[in-house]
Figure 1 (cartoon, rainbow over the protein chains, first blue to last red):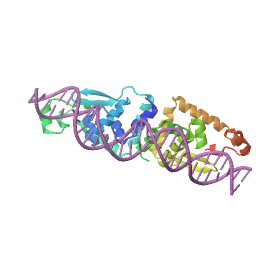
Figure 2 (cartoon, rainbow over the protein chains, first blue to last red):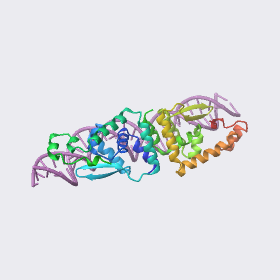
Figure 3 (cartoon, rainbow over the protein chains, first blue to last red):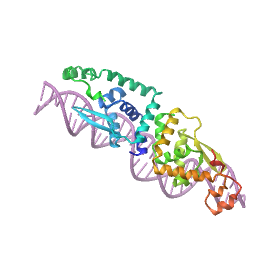
Figure 4 (tube, rainbow over the protein chains, first blue to last red):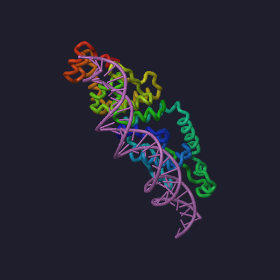
Length: 136
Length: 136
DNA sequence: ATTCTATATTCCTATTTAGGAATATAGTCA
DNA sequence: TGACTATATTCCTAAATAGGAATATAGAAT
């Protein structure tokens, strides 16, 4: 992956927030929606942008698509992700995102219904299944 | 300066090359033209782009415009510039740019004609003036 | 005053980008 | 089967970007 392409992936705030989260753990689209509070299309398109450039990988887990940072990363990407994490410390938005993620992860072993919102979901998924796609 | 804006400045190859050079020393436009081998408009426009976003400063030295990285830089910018310098090590183009810059700097105390190209220039500037705008 | 030099700006065009609305798709459940 | 859920894609529009050609400008030299 080219250095310029890395910065192209970095030069949008939504994508930066996504990457900041992915640096912590693989996540599925609904998590991004919840944490970032942005519409589904927007999230989905930025994920596509990152996918097309090989920045992230996807894996299907039933209905959920789990995104993760691509496994084998060029050293420049690694350095820049590290740098991003340092830079982001001081920024309220990014920090809040990470906090929200931590909250979700704490509920990681609870039934899916603990995260997914509706009563219908609760009926559908019961208590058995855990949020496996939240675990790294 | 916003983090996203930093990456916007970084997400074009020509601008990256310019910034890589400026991390070494302030330079004037003709140096960029020579080192990058790109047309004047292109250089000038990218410099304008960086200027408008407060990434670089300009100072006039007679006919020459000397560009430098903006003096007081946000910590995120500082970190990313450092990261850029690390990343760039492995890339042929950037390395070659730095090499060319070093060559020019070595001739820093020679008359301007040593750098500026034509015989006409040589006539015009004689041997007296040194490339002060190359000194940091 | 005129010419020349270094650089900037304007005008143009093609391409990329961001984002929303609507729709499609693939998998799950009843 | 048909309804529902999570996510992706298509179609649209507005804005940003990149770059070239031509021209403008400010200062220096003659």
